[in-house]
Image (cartoon, rainbow, N blue to C red; front, top):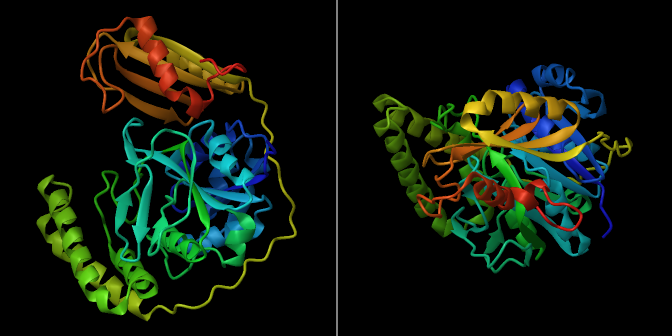
Length: 415
């Protein structure tokens, strides 16, 4: 299969440490032809200069709080046939690009999206979903983990998640990219519906996995509690104006406000916001909605291609390596993993205690994956709560669970 050149675009603002971690994960991709484009503020520019591979990045300085405009700046300098997007609070599995880009071998595929795991590295935030003009999502059941190419049904679009999606560059550029009226929230959903209007095919790729952390930002706390809902309200107003029938908009907006208030009350009950914050945040959303009603909606101009050519990322990789042991040896195991990562390998660390503790997975900014948990505990959240297993069998089981996403197989496809 021909490997299409890919431009990976990361937008970042105010999170330099998180950005460096994301870029480390991207740098370890096994895909043979990709470039990395970073659209970020001056703080982010300074931070990535200290990475060993910082000189290989295409850097675009941009310091406006508008993710759509920032992504369009990235598309403008992208020289790949496919452009892939990931957020600065996420890390891709090593085989992310390999799986995500594969459906584009079909020339009629315009977009692709993968699955997203949450903060514990095990449970999924999002799998396959569709969305309609009221921004209502519906899960799509897939029979297995093979890519599925989908043509949208009337009034619905195949949803791609902003932190794990790819598009054929020429298609995206011809559409004008992302609508800058969506400064934050619903930006990719708007694009999904515009693609659906064209009857474009979107592939859902389960094995193209990204781990998404929901890191702290000006809009939310480290525990996901919102700090401001102005842009959420504004984007919802723009979205409904573009995609929802006029007679249905008022009802949809009313129901949306009710849902947001329930969410805020849940945060308050958990002690993550104060009672007065509920009213304040709801006011900010309503003010944002008024702002969104005034934002211009216009035809987006085509994004021209930069004269700068493809800057292929080059990294000497020693391949994947598995390091495992008991919990009492964790410190030594992590030292071994760091050493392996420095030498160019991509270590997967498995540390088991003789307990029934649930498992979790984390990617360390030094360049290695770590899974910890009880030898008898649950990793798959739908699996058995407690399983009697020996160390060797448990290690084999966990390696198989992530092998294809992390490319732990040998040339014969064995783990």
